[in-house]
Amino acid sequence: MNWPQLLVTVLTLGSIFGVVTLSLNLQYARGGMINFGIVAYFAVGAYTYAIFTQPPPQGLDQYKFGFGWPWWAAVIVAGLAALVFAAVTGWPTLRLRGEYLALTTFAFAEVFHSLLLNERRIGNGTVGLARVERPFGDWGPIEEKYVFAGAAVLLLVATLVVFRRLLVSPYGRALDAIRDDETAALAAGKPAQQMRRQVFLISAVPVGFAGAVYAMFTTLAQPSLFTAEVTFIVWIALVLGGERSVYGVVLGTVGLVFFEEIVRAWPFETVRSAQIAAAVEHVVTGLVFIAVLRYQPFQAAATRLKVSK
Amino acid sequence: MLLLQFFVSGVATGCFLILATIGFSLTRRVEGFLNIAHAELLGVSAFTTWWLNAHHGWHVLAAAVAAVAFTALVGLGIARVVYDPIRHRGPAVLLITSTGVAFVIGGALHGLIGTGIRTLDIGLAHRYEAFGLRVTSHQLIVVGLAAAVSVSLALFLNRTRTGLAIRAMAVNPELAASRGVNLSATSRATWLLSSGLAGLAGVMLAVLATLTTDLAFAQILQILAVAILAGLGSLYAVILSGLLVGVAMDVSAYWIPAGYRPLVAFAVVIVVLLFRPAGLAGTRAA
Image (cartoon, chains in turn blue, green):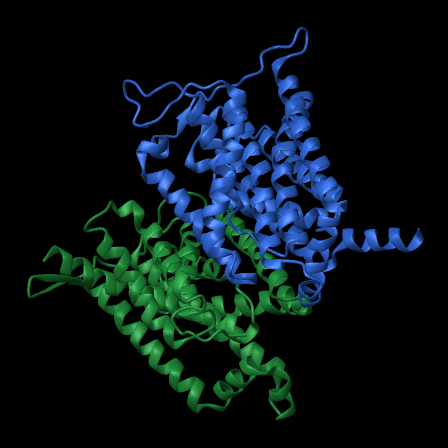
């Protein structure tokens, strides 16, 4: 097994998905919103980046738009697009709470996925957009994949810093107050509904950025990359890391990605054994998920730490 | 005419959706959470039927009965081992846990069955024609079964002791317990019933469709659509909303490509939720 390659991949993908998990954590652990359609915001970022960087359609291309913008402008637009998508989907859904919200966000993600799949004018339908632009070349003696991993880590760190600043500010404390006791927070003059909506919008932006970076990494924007499975994986990572713990969430994501990449990179002799391995990966992921939710080891550890301090 | 034909097949689709959703809604109503793994139970049942029928040469009816019983027990087992110990953590944790259960069952099916297309060892469906419209015998079976299940479920919940206990527990567990309802026995009965219904829907899935291991997961989207539309936890509205979603999906194929079927289902849901946030039944089940 090629360990350095594996580690770079884990670092890159772990950082990209770490950004998504962090945003989900902000929505769930701070805002009390269950977003079961997070993959859609991720896909919006990826597709926006692909569409804005690719050349105008020619030959067999079925997509309608290609703007050929520079990569940095497209990344910014990807974040904005995720914000707009969050505003559009948040408007009808955020009146709902709890499981109704979970289901409608899930529904929106499915509708969006189905749209990407069937509407060839957006991104060639099932085929997807290939050869998405990858901005970084070799950086002197440093190979491109290391530069890229560095960029992904940078995005993760930036997200972490911004979210941390936000959460320790008075704004963050007001959010905690709303989550813990909405009636009391309302009585203290905190606009609960409005602030939840703001959190929903703010947290969508990094997800859009992460989607753009993911499109660069795979050089592909294809509907099959953005299924409900991504949502579940991110949720599992969130639960693995222990909700409300920012570093735990990142660690959980990296751990999960590491586990998946090892299964993927393992040299299997036959197709059947690879199939069984993929199935076992699913089963183990599910079992870990169930066990973590039941015993909550990370939360227990966090409480112990606090007590001993 | 073609439009009417789509309508007829939509009714059959709707009846399948009723079968698939009613167990899901029962779980939501009594146990109080959304069991995402419900759809995977359809897969368990469908592949048990296939395994007994196509592999071991059982008659399809015997295979179906065995599959439904097996699925009911699997559902009960999962509930005992996985859901019961964490029930105090609330519906959100249960909902997320059930996606973990869906992963486990789905992965196990992939591992045991493998990829590829399977069909039951039964003859092709008979076609009947009337007024220029065609229906197959399989579609008629689904419609009949959905009607029979709806009626017998209503009778069961209203007339029998266990049924009344289930309804009492759904409304107020503490009060029910103080009036002498055995909560754990009632919960067991609910799980057997809802998983058995999933089993029945799974058999129908095996009869109607060619089986692949990811087919079961695809069903959860439609089940969710029907359940939200009905209003989570309401049972009688499932019948109406199942038919509505089924007809909307199939009739829409008249104007737009069939690939948009799931989109149509959720578009209906989103529109309804905008105007009636608690679904068709209109009352918010707590």
